[in-house]
Image (tube, rainbow, N blue to C red; front, side, top):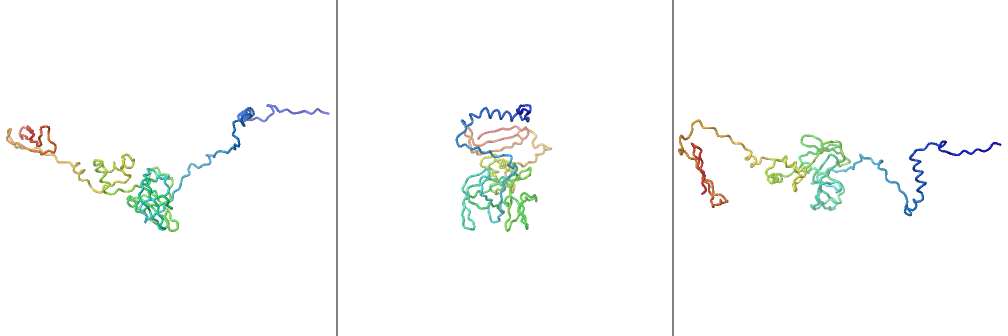
Length: 293
């Protein structure tokens, strides 16, 4: 009878394993005695969420209904508004006699689109875009059979929507446009000229830049339009024609012709209590005398 040979497993005839796998088995056997000691009772392991399954391009879609009877842009989600100003602005009453408070306003930013002064209405059922507010911002709203467009006065389309049943709606989401689109409400003429005077007759392009970048505290985020010329700015920037040199002098000797001017009374007196200034100029020599009276 042939003796039974028993094959003993060795590192040479074993299937090669990965180094990391061998190290893991070694550590598991060596440290298995302290695992229960540091593990809480009734502990149940749960896998963590896999972040690689999340789509990085996923964006939140916000639906707005275009309403010609709505006076202001309104929305119900406060988290989507930036530069929010918390202020009670009254209430809104709907057709079903429901009353909702207006708790403030902010800017709506969705990708490349920025819409200013959107009211936050608590309990609002649908987000609303106001046709009137778009028109106040020098924008045009066009309705067609199945689509609607919002474009500027040059005809550039800024937003586009579609018609579902009897309502026109616009869906805002991240766009591929590299340049941001800002739909700002237009300031009234009195507001525009008030800030023009407050900022020392600053030009309107710079005022709009300050408003856009939120540089001046208290300056509202509105579009300031120059609808007429400022009389003070026009007078301050006016250029006068220079006087031409006379070919024949008016005087031929000293003190033949004097130019005298009296200025006063001044609102603030001088140190010696004088309120008038007398200036005398000799036409021939241009010598000048100044006396305080």
